[in-house]
Image (tube, rainbow, N blue to C red; front, side):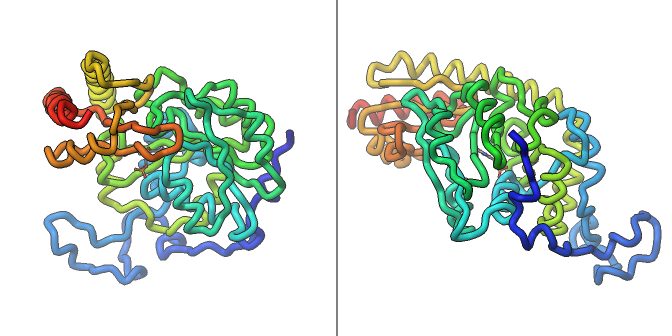
Length: 353
Ligand SMILES: *Cc1c(COP(=O)(O)O)cnc(C)c1O
């Protein structure tokens, strides 16, 4: 299989003249900066936010590159992974003409983003144990299929997809294969970032929103070939990552050990939650989890969900989602939160189940 990135691109993107920021012509840090209409006196806060941030996020990428073992020019940073998803549609999918393949049940943003961009969706459902069916995926592909979105570990099913199936797609599909690894830190599966050299059509997405505990800062990563990353960088809004986010994440990268210890704690709590739930007679199924949440099947899940809300316990209702009938998605909390959830679950189910 030969991969021709240029033939996948929307024609006007291939010839696009990107925005050049005021700081492109002079990259020194010292100088009299009268080029960007900033406030020279500083900010109205204690911290100085008056200068535009680095549009290339160079310092941050250098450090992320070391941790992830991916060269800086193969890293894209977005305002959450959601920005990378949107930019992929805008770069590769002609509205009203091209299509993408989704594997439901999966992350809702792929479909929302496709719809916003007026891109058709072809759905190839996972099996009842939430695995991909590569031959059905290939049957759904046509000349207009630009992207296949694979989420592993998958949201909301929590399991990882078989590596061999993903590789089969990478080897046989001529478009872009997104492997969304938002939950990779909670899995024993190695990241697909180690296979970027082999597969020029691979784009791996990760995020600082989950294991790193930085959801509010909005920082998502995409790893791919230099060529794909260059395209995303050309079409992104120039200052898509705020200076506050860049500085805070840069400083936090030194605390990678803390990420590991928090992740370990979450995994232990996931085990606790799973064990406690398995003792409850009305729980019909706890799906295997490689993520920081559990998908749990309970009779009358809709009613249980509502009753839990009345107790101010908020879980994600997936009861109406394909293959997740009567399921709730429960994020792993602290021990106190997990106990509060379990206690209230017992209470509301004694009435409604
Ligand atoms: C949470 C999540 C993300 C992260 O999105 P951000 O925009 O980076 O916060 C990405 N993909 C999946 C499947 C997720 O569940």
